[in-house]
Length: 362
Image (cartoon, rainbow, N blue to C red; front, side, top):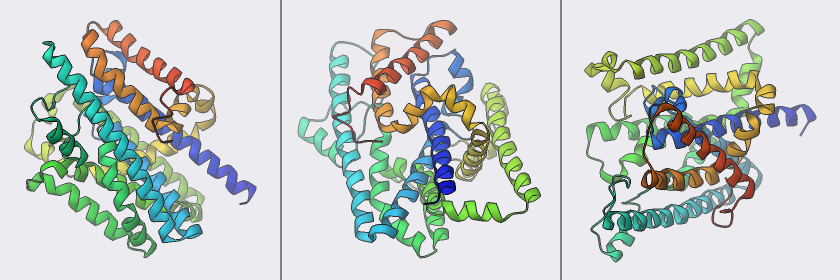
């Protein structure tokens, strides 16, 4: 690889790591939902036009598209599929184990009269039935449930990569969007979350597979056209966030049936998968513009998070699950301190890596 290409590649990874680091760091505050708080005023509480989780799935798919194309071109389809299925197996084991662990903790808390455990607890199934439901992914519990959603995505990645290698990106996009729409019109049962989040992952996979092609096309634009496109994407991303924040704090503006159909509907709004890539692209360009100062400042915390996102995601799930048993939300400064303390403790955990032997690398 040429030196210039290597440098560009490193910059690209730093930018994506900064984005992933922010999205996974803010999840603790989003899920704990102790309001009012400083982070609660800016994180969107998972209710903006595009959430941190949606962009995180996009970036995950983006990186997978890059890596699996490399595997396909260097080692062939068998190696590519094996690497993807190996990842699915790793995530499956961690996801099922965490579901069973959190269920045991939740049942013990319920037996002691606590009501602070997360909703959705299976408190009645026998041990064999519980194990079967968790093993077949029909039941997930705790704040690491996204790991379960990733399992079928990684199982299907080889199919997506094969289609992309045949220049059938439009098929991948249309199939993933059609799957996203299904839960709004049919009873899709326990597979609904897989369909809901899969669209973002596979949109990202398509973009990641064609990453170099997209960068090449951008580079062939005239300087004026390139600047206009970059400015338009950044402006759109800022506008999407600003409009979402205004609507979040003025919910009376979102009461129409049309708005619910397009953007809400339990985050199944029809336009959300179309808005998310625009938001992610504009955010990427904005962060890329200020990458160096960001990496030297907030990047000292965000980069370790972004480079160890699975580890961070699992670690923060323990805090979010256990903190409500100890204390609930109070005032603005108390809630803000709790959010920031969790982030700092998880950062220390990343440095120590006390759970590294349990988790595959992120």
